[in-house]
Image 1 (cartoon, one colour):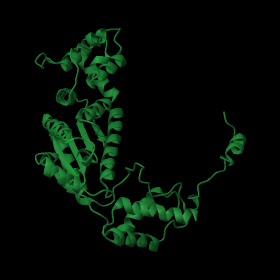
Image 2 (tube, helix red, strand yellow):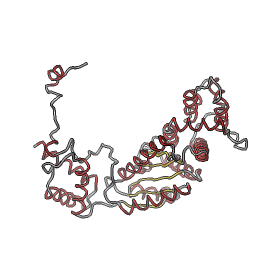
Image 3 (cartoon, one colour):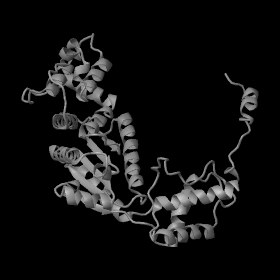
Image 4 (tube, rainbow, N blue to C red):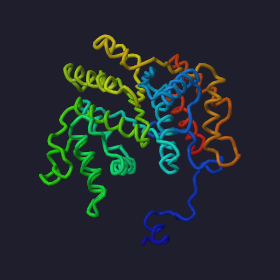
Length: 367
């Protein structure tokens, strides 16, 4: 183990007494997150968009019918913050409900990684299915097997086999879940003959339509058994699908798979997409049938006044401040940052304003 004196000699500092230069202002860190930092603690403003989102989600919570929303805003206006905020809150609810078992939770899934086709997103979803939720499903299959009327598919055979084998003393639940997940994400060929027979599966899942159908059926089974209420999707930076990197044929196929994925779910799925106005314009021009399937459009606002800028700044300061000490920024500094940004771009985007505030704080602390 590295002792303190050796660390001091090696690195030229005493790590036991080192303190943050922000402490004299009452902070442990710069109160304004950097561009690459994930931040999901709050959303400033955007009241109209938040109200619509919450109304639609409450409706989804009541009836479980599919809902779709499309967040539209320029870069750095707050789309990622908006999605991350609700994703984070749903994750906390997921954890608490899994612990308390009072109500079946929703599973939130956030992504901005799209790669080559929709099957990549499908695989992300399968990886994010919590193990304890799959265990809960397998447990119910022992006492309450799938109905014989359920369509005879690889999925139904795998689930029925899990229920039949669950009572066996040789049943290894973790191994079964691992095999089930590997097969479901398209890993049939990685299973040996005995593993395939153990699962009861016969074919590989090689494309999005087959995977989406199995996922829809799986979620419906868990919803009926009060294990999982449904999936809540957050597709961020959706403009990536209409930008460079994919051929026109790949984009068309990808978007068509997403449209079909939404259509496949009759219940138990809530979709929120986020896109730039430029990306939406390309989508409307090249794939006019897609935008309407992405749901009601919600517009996010820029900061429009010095008053809003001051409130925006204060909420970050209040959130990160440990104790009241010397002001880390004064009112005139904040106003000047806002006015310079407005003069430069005519629009004051939250992300850009946050970056300028961060720079201003660095000057105060380190110069």
